[in-house]
Length: 484
Picture: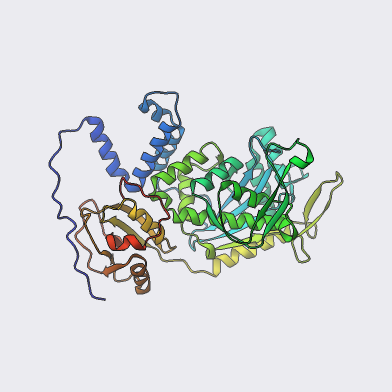
């Protein structure tokens, strides 16, 4: 392809010198330059969060000093190179728990239990659904349902997630060092903060006995609503998404707990895709909303740097890179269901031991390790050469691919470009550059322009956006008029 002449990105003269700033301002500017673009976004976002949480301190500096969230962000910035437990062995396991929380019947019962097993080198993951009625072993040898393992330990000692992790590590034959637990209100708030999710509903869900929160003691005829979610692509807000994954009495196959587990996995994939589309780390408003939503509804043993590292893995997944396991009690399933002596329904492993569960998980993880070669990744920098707010952030979301890592987003020194240009190294595969050209209505060149001194070395791909890209981008992200 013909090289496109590189525009002079440094034509704008430097602004006249400003009056000497105060010591506080000089320090602030030095910190911002050192932190980098992503750190700036995080710090500013959570500073606003600290102020909007209505601290008892009327002084903003005192509010920021005492804000637990801001302290978490500072911890994150001080530990940018954290290595997760299991990462050196190329296998990071996390337990995901959903509970009802305050105001719900059985607030501590584990309503949703999933184990995510991540292989960083291949950008693949295995998602394992654990039935809430599965009997799990306790340290004293007794058996207890999975949902109750969490509830009793949380009520007695405040370590429900740890107890559930310990039991599942034994049953599945894998070490699970981390857990994330969210309650229903946090789940609803998360989906709403993402402006909803699009889910492919495989079969119409028709549940005439969906429980109405707060009506548990009302007359029978007033306790339930008739929930119907038609088959097809459905855009769900947080309330509807919660009903979609909680429904237990639907007509036909959707009335089983195993279908419910598949719906939970489908919704989790939808949330992950929505976060990726939104360009979360390049959108301060979205990040603020998520932080506000999760702050009081999320419990985890992860440090802020570990959470950030986990999130960096999640951005690289797509639907094709996630393998899903749902244990069932069918003729060839791993489980057997029946009534216990106390009359409650429970699931036991087929054959009387957990060997069948361990072997199923081991096969899935081995397949994940061998069927996909490691993905070569390329560092991408995006500059907004227009005055259109948020264009670079939307571009980041549009080009999201496992092989592309957006490392920097900023405004270009020149903001009047008409044609977008994709500068790239010679080694970048031609089909990838052609796809980016098509997506962004852009030209391409291997002749990198002269870069500002603040850029130490050119990335693998530099995208300088002009007005030609504006009409091609679907607005997944709300624009931020402050830049990008």
